Length: 146
Image 1 (tube, one colour):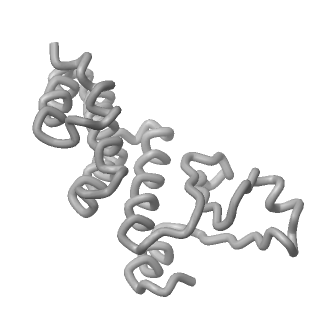
Image 2 (image 1 turned 180 degrees about the horizontal axis):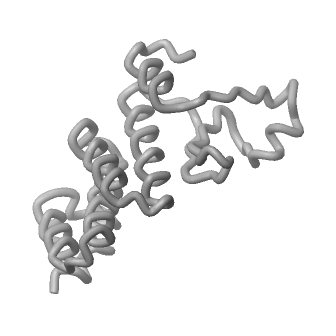
């Protein structure tokens, strides 16, 4: 499936992979609005899309995207604790990934949603002062610094 064993293991443990070949199944590609290949979609069991990314990626980046997709799916279900853990997985395992600032932002939002405590948002804004301060996600969180 994927040449890196870590990626294959993650997919095997957490996903039900489905392959739609664009040339052999153009209707399937159309159904999923695949504009480029490969297109990876993280969906809920009912088929609701929660996250998508396109193109080939190195293993570390690919795993970061998969982890972010799982966290976003948990967030969409209202499973705040699982969502926060998932976003923190991206931060812990892929801190240099382009996705890390987004994961930090949503980890704070997940914590806030679970607790209703505005301190979760302030803590996140403060975390952005030392990490990813030049990111668009830091700008979005800056309103929480209060």
